[in-house]
Picture 1: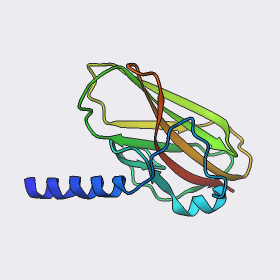
Picture 2 (picture 1 turned 180 degrees about the vertical axis):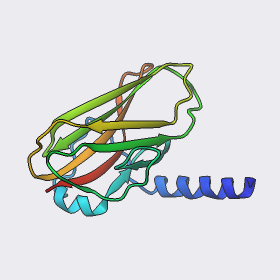
Picture 3 (picture 1 turned 45 degrees about the vertical axis):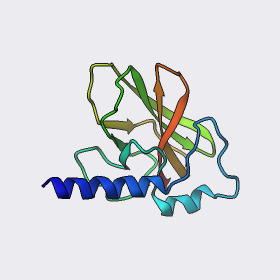
Length: 155
């Protein structure tokens, strides 16, 4: 069992290390078309992210295309932090660099929470390509850090 856990952890670490690091306030690459990114599905940016998906944490992601009036669920899984401190995990539903809807979950210093569920229910939404950006803000430095992005389409 320990060997399996170690192998799984190593695979997650290797997969996340290969991704580019971004700062939350950095500008996205202008050569990347959001619609093309929908086919990519997700981008894990931070090393403490185990997974991000377009479904609640206890469900399996099954699609990335949504109707303009249906709710969009997203979840984020993080590793246990080595240093615990108050922080905020936010999710931003974005279209063309504009925030359509946002949600935040505050985490106290004593919490060991690893899974975070978000639901976006503002409707109707314009058709097109969207992304959900997961951001973490730690109280110690107050600087937002991009954790992951998931891409979707509203048709």
